[in-house]
Image (tube, rainbow, N blue to C red; front, side, top):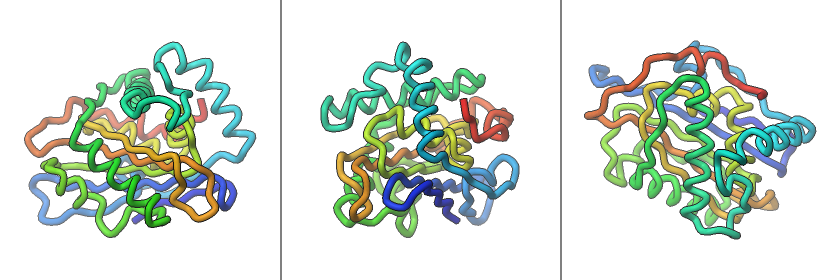
Length: 225
């Protein structure tokens, strides 16, 4: 099941998807990330005024901690945007008492490939099975989630928007995830859309143990800062 929220058509769009595959379960179930913690199925996304407020908050709150978080994609090296994105995601987690996520080269490969595909095909979606893409790069996962966004030119813009949307926020704050990878492109996955397409893949490895089972931060989503 996919959650889609858009303040204005052709401006910015977000989607999130999460799959929970318990090691002992016979089958996996697709959820909007909100279902992981509380079973709620609602979502919201800020309009232009709320987005402007979020950007002002990020400027005050994140810039001292995350270098290049406001650098536009295409104007700095890809590695710098990757570091900024990871820094922002980990800041959202650690300020709520959750363990940091580790940068996974395999998940970066999965996320970047899908971002490239969406922009090339002008198709903003998770495809038929996002978890199969994670498996295809060699990541043996037990739980996985994915956020995508279109219309954001900076890491701070994308992460702030995700935190202000229920399903995306809960993917970021899912306590059991241990690894993350981000992909981005200057183009748009939507014909006539605003430039800036993003994918973030989250996962817990099959052989890994969750470092936290604290669902309270995820249950508090979304966060307006």
